[in-house]
Length: 315
Image (cartoon, rainbow, N blue to C red; front, side, top):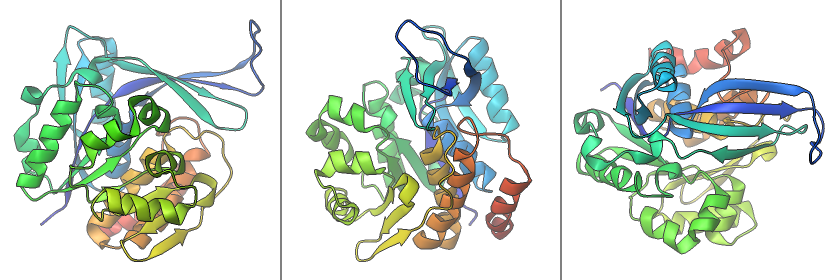
């Protein structure tokens, strides 16, 4: 059976602002200002597709120019999209500030992507897939939390595997850890993609190995893939923790690095069934991303070379 992925969540446009110095209160500075496609769920879907995986995306957009551009963007990436349109809300947008070190901070608008409801889910798209990915951006408020939980229930009833990205340590803190866990730990997650800060907040642990072991207990022995930025990643399969070294530390822009890592990991893992091999591949993809501006830069020859191995395996 060919593998396929269904991703449910946010599509948003990133207004990316990058400066080469510190901004002074009331001051002015030259830098780079770009409008780029984004949204954690959409980013992951694009990277999974770029890595050769048949991918569907379910989300909600405004009936506006940005919504039209969202469709065109997903078409150009050959994503099979199922976008609900609304007149009540504008297509999502995010302000992304990238400092001189390459680290990013975001302010997310409350766009149409936050208003997906259960009745709008195309259930046949979920049931025709083999794997469902959800992001915590769909759990911090309701809607769209109810829609994502219904999608997870449908997936489980049909025997799909499920992955989940905790998304934001600050949003988890603001929501409250126990409240966040009450909505997510019963999803029967197979693969969890926290970064270090999210793992630290969810477990109270500081050591990466303690974090993954604690998360495996919270999320019922899920495969834990702890993203460690400059230190690579840590893969925990319930018994063994395997350190994955970084492929680069040449950070230009961290925007979308975690999404590209998770999308590449899922694409590789669904075919290879090797978490360690998939993580090595995903670190190479994420390394290329952080050396460019934006969450999904236009592929070049170097990236094509990285992708070729897994794409050839899919074919």
